[in-house]
Length: 336
Image (cartoon, rainbow, N blue to C red):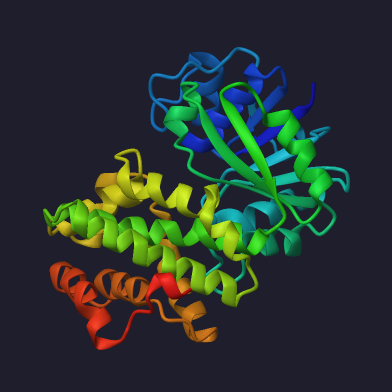
């Protein structure tokens, strides 16, 4: 049995806490909000983020940073991407060299364009850093729906250790050492899910969405490889696997946000209705900057940015993307 601490009491962090407690580990959840801790401990629920799921009695919760990570073998970072740097900075004084940090957020640091694993290494250089990614809705993992993900780490032995502690008959982890490929796929699939959702919100069909997903994967792969990632990573769970689930499921907050935008709602109205972090919105600007830095063609990403922040009409953006190959903007994915 290991002590595992989950930093963050949102849907994904809570779902992983439930699963790991059922695996027999000693599990702590840290939240910055005392009311969230009180609900977890007294009511054994997380009604806002994971309604209908019972929190096992074995799970403890606290707002005290030192108490949360003291003696923990594995520390899971389950906070929004834009909060990762400050969160790790706040916890760094209490983290030890032998502790493993597992990041489950998906995004990029806007100011530096860093991968989140690099952000974590910068703030807590004493720890090993892993990334958990793949097609994994919190709602399904908490309800024991069979799920496969991957754990990526430059140190394969560390990845295998985490794999062993997380594994059970309904949650399978594969290991990977390609952090760049895994994290770029994880971040950009949220942008592509916005595009897929916009198509759905406009009332377009499966043909349109399939085209956007295929061309979206080409963009993800182009940028990832330009940054040093491996092509085969994008054919796996953190690439095409995560893209499929995020672009097609109503559990996907990024797809839901895209649907609302396609139906004519403003960005602020959309975020207010979704009520949870829409990581694609946070990622798209950094993705456009990376495309410029590495001289990579990313027309879908750039179109989503134009819709979100430059007032571009959603239908015009989608229709332009459907004809842009004729204008020479898109590289045929088969040639990648």
